[in-house]
Picture 1 (tube, one colour):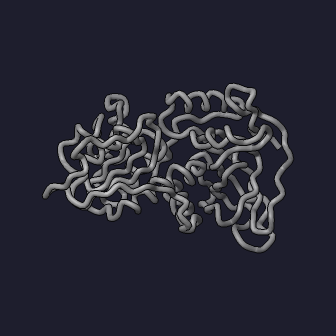
Picture 2 (cartoon, helix red, strand yellow):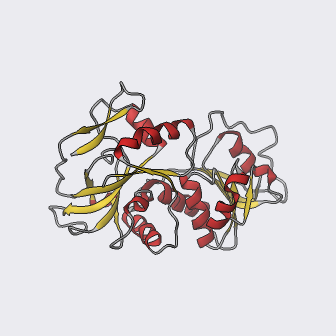
Picture 3 (cartoon, rainbow, N blue to C red):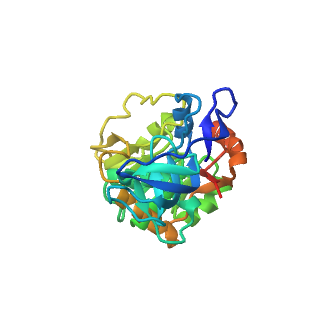
Length: 308
């Protein structure tokens, strides 16, 4: 089968090659991959893998061999899958606890963005607490997680406040996704918020924390910034309007079962209630371009390789 494999001698760190098709274990299905997503986290993981390994976290396709132990979906079922590696290939063996099903005919490219971007946004919002009637700030709102967080916050009855450095370029798009307010910096929002979903870190996280009102929660989800989070003197002091504020660390794989969330998100994409955060879509041969764009920060949203 074709796969992108680790090759530390190449600028992209990977190359297209033919490798053996994986053999699934008893509790795994074999999936013919129709599309897979590229993430900065994938690239960081690939840097630590030996040459010849197949990286890749997210992939979507159809089951071509059901699990031998009788668990999991039947042959032909569309699925979205997650794993620590192995996603950047024509076939993937994946445990039934690491996949979600999707309606027949669902777009595989869209489904491939579910496990990391969409599911991170969903679980970060849950970590922040109630959404109905709340003001929720999303930093890095043009990224893959950020765009999903804006949409899901609006679906949950919140007023999303989207933070992006490029208001003129992306403001209309973010408002179309459900943002009630779009600002270039947390400090530009004249008011307090109940929740912050922060996908950036660094000084931006500090300024976003300053917008929290009483009982507010900042979910520290991303770490794109290179500088440290340095809170100025007095930043953590309480007053009558800003008391009991919390910064919460986040990891989406917290032991809560994945299949129900993957399946629900896939259903929302299939019926058009969610829009996929895809800003680059290409073939195997174009993957190097997407990897370069990810590394330089030129890509806003998700990059997806379509294998067909």
